[in-house]
Amino acid sequence: MARGEERAATVRSWCGDIAALVRAVGTRAPSANLSCVCGFGADAWDLLFGAPRPAGLHPFREVGAGDRRAIATPGDILLHIRADHMDLCFELASQMLNKLGDAVTVVDEVHGFRYFDLRDMVGFVDGTENPTGRSATNYTIIGDEDADFAGGSYVIVQKYLHNLDAWNGLTVEQQELIIGREKLSDVELDESIKPSCSHSSLTTIDENGQEVKILRHNMAFGRPGSKEFGTYFIGYAKTPKPIEQMLENMFVGRPPGNYDRLLDYSRAVTGGLFFVPSADLLEELPDRTPAAAPSSIDESHQDDHEESRDGTLNIGSLKGTPQHE
Ligand code: HEM
Image (spheres, protein in one colour):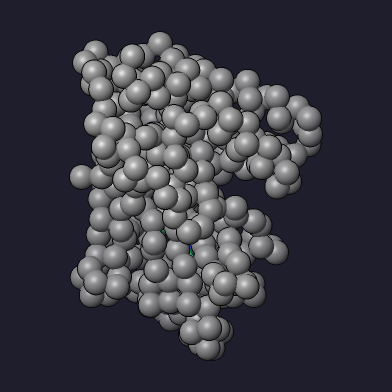
């Protein structure tokens, strides 16, 4: 068996182990709410599982220009591991990577944390307008529109680094106009004073007059000793479209030029789009092989993504997988 095929087979079989690993680690501390979401990028999906591909899955589409650009970066597999205690996340990540062995190379690993009362690194409460309950399900879970992949979801992740000295040089009132909410109370600014370029205005979108929401799980991360201060954006939706529209509004502007001033203080250094299979589909994935699996993968490209980026999250990269378009 060619090395590339062997690695793909390891990853496929690992898909069937994920639920058991989460159970094994989670049962040791049931109150810590361990969970793990596993997503696949477009190239990895094609290589591992072949057709059909989930309808909305494609490589992350870059938007913006110059310093204000949402860039696409390598990443075939995303693991979003959450728990109330870091030790569970650490243990699960270790167990997952043990199973994967040398079938993947970790290209980024971010250890996020909850910052005080759900504030992000720029000091604002983050997640307030998230949909909850049935509404969250309706906005995030694929239904009959893509029946083969019903019960799944899409996730877009981006790692943002903030220029915190510059941000903290602003007055609280200036920061509030940028976000569109009061900093201490988290109350939304009155429409009469909220600028159309505020973050909350540009990320409020509608389709045929109906507001379309996404589910965000942003996390703070950083290393004060290295002056690294970041927000890891994690957005779930039943199609990538609303998140892509929000990115367009933030980076290009609505109308163009009326962009999100948060980006004058924050730079996106990674970007990826992943399809998240339902738990049932994940269990079935070991049995799916692409009809026309590549007989071998060009080993000469295998070191292209060997080096870990600076930073930290479990976005693994299948060795030898073609990366971005
Ligand atoms: C530097 C990274 C980011 C930071 C620090 C940040 C922070 C915030 C904060 C503080 C709020 C207000 C409270 C809330 O409703 O959660 C907010 C709202 C929101 N953000 Fe972000 N965000 C970031 C990136 C993004 C990105 C990349 C998207 C989508 C592509 C996004 C989508 C949204 C949405 C949909 C809302 C709710 C808007 C509303 O309904 O009022 N955010 N964000």
